[in-house]
Length: 80
Image (tube, rainbow, N blue to C red):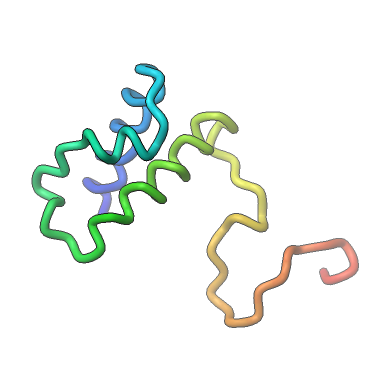
């Protein structure tokens, strides 16, 4: 998992610097050792997320983070 995460982060950094969109980067990417992963097309979403982290200094708004519960609502002061 850590190797894949690093792969996505490196790919995002290089592609963003080259002016590519996440979709363009995904289409051009050589997934190498990760090409046989189930749902390999998720690279597009993963790159979108990595671009967001690059733009925001890796701090994601609470509403973007995955939640382990089936009940998902954005956190507000009233719900704390």
